[in-house]
Length: 190
Ligand code: AMP
Image (cartoon, rainbow, N blue to C red; front, side):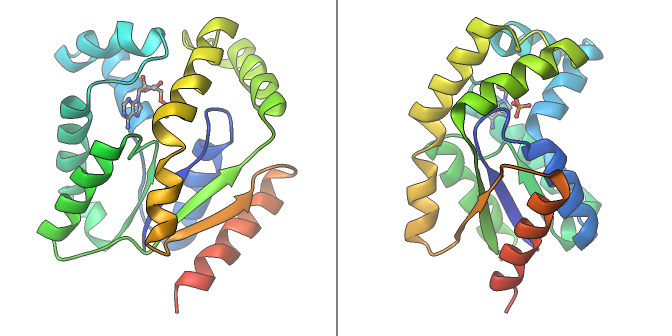
């Protein structure tokens, strides 16, 4: 399975990506997690992206694309993958297309987690208390939601035009949401 999970910050993508990926025995690849690890390890990439991330902006496409290109070449991604947080811009969609074409593969489905926006802000504020992420302050949360609406929400149309999109209700019990996502994947696995 080659999957993408889309949805606004706070939709529960990370949690669900891990569960769905475990079900299919594929790696869940989160660009946000990889960037955060680089920041924590103070790598050159981490130093480059730290401020950008803390302000809620997107990391430039060139950096993000290179990171994903390298990650998809790792052995564990040969059997499939679930991308969480990538692609996020139309240029990243094009780049992912070219990566997949290079390995003669294609996406099986794009899962869109839909959530109530007020609920998203509450979830993110709660996560800020627990995890203390520097991009979970109220102003930055608002900015991240704006950036999502402007730059990433339009990706839904691109994938829907390709008949790859599955919209899944992301509200409610975590296990129920996972069940809905897996059912959506079954629809595509034929
Ligand atoms: P996330 O954990 O997916 O919410 O990502 C956290 C932050 O990492 C984002 O707000 C961006 O600054 C950066 N980031 C993660 N993925 C991407 C991407 N595909 N394109 C650009 N920036 C990204």
